[in-house]
Image (cartoon, rainbow over all chains, first blue to last red; front, side, top):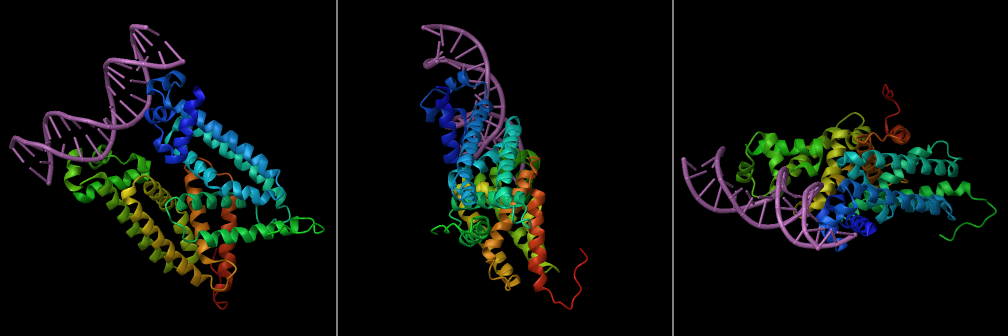
Length: 187
Length: 187
DNA sequence: GTCTATACTTCGATAGAC
DNA sequence: GTCTATCGAAGTATAGAC
C-alpha cells in the first residue's frame, strides 16, 4: 500500500512535474483517500523523499547496465539524453530548489551519480587528455536535459545540429579506443 | 502603478522562481492590496505575460550589446552563463511548461533569441564548418543554464572542467577569426 | 488500517461601496 | 482607482470513530 502512493507520486512527477505532486492528487491517482496518505507518510516531504530515493536507485542501476554494454560511451549518452531519465533529472533539480528538507539528499545523489560517470568516462577517454572527463559529462548532462525539456514544448531548433556534434564526438572518441583488429560497428 | 506589479512579480521570479508568483505575494511585495492587482490585470496569466515580455525585451537588448562588444563570441557565452540571465531562462521554461496560455509566447521568443544567436555565431564561426553554429549555441545555452542552477544548490562538481573546455574553445574559435596583425587581448 | 469530519492556509477571482 | 468583504477550490495536516 505504501508503494501504491510512491508509484502514484512518481507517475505524477513524470506526467506533470514536481509541481503536480500534492496530497490530494497523489491519493486520487492511487485511488485512495487523501488522509490515508498521512497514515503511511508523516508529511508530503516524506513521500517525496521516498520517490526521490527510488528514482536514484533506478538511475544507478541503469548506469551499471550502460557501463556493461558494448558501446559504453554511447550508452552513457543515451542515459543522459533519453526523455524519461532527463526529464526526471530536471524535476529532481526543481525539487531540490524548492524543498529544503530534501535538497541534501538530491545533491548528494547527484554528486554520486556524476562522480561515477566521470570515473567511467575518464577511463574510456584516457587517450584524450585535452577533454577532461568531468567537463564532458557536464556537457552531456546539460545538453541531454535541455533537448528533452525543450522538445516537450515543441521547441526543437538546433537540436539536430547539437546531436550531430555529439554523434561525431562519440565516433571520434570511440575510434582510438576500440581494438583496431576488431571490425567497426555497423553504423 | 501597473509597472509596480510587474516589477514585484519579476523580483519574485528571480528570488524564488515562477512557483513563488501568486497574486497575494506579488501584491505584498509591491506594497499593495491583492485585489488591486486585478484592477490592472484581468488574470494572473496576464501579469505573468507582461513579465515574460519585458524579460524578453531586455534579453534582446543584452544580445545586441554583446554583439557590439570587442569579443562577441565570449560576450555571447557570458550572456548564456551569467547567473541572472540563465536563471531567468530556466524559469521561463518552467512557466512555459505549466501555463498553457503563455507557452506560445515563450516558445516564440526563445526561437527568435536562438535564431539571432545562431546567425551571429555562424558568422563568427564561418571558418569552422565542422561545428554547426546551431549546435554550438545549444550547447552553450544548456551548459550555462545547468551550471547556474546547480551552483544555486551548492553542486559544483565538474563545473571547473566544463568551463575549461569552453574557455579553450573560445580561444580556439577566436584565434583564426581575429586579424593576425592585431595584438591578442590581454587575458 | 481505513473511515468521516474538520481545521487552517493559500490560491485565483469577483461584487459592490466609496 | 482603491477599499472591504467574500467565494469556492485546493493545499497540508490532525482528531477520533470503527
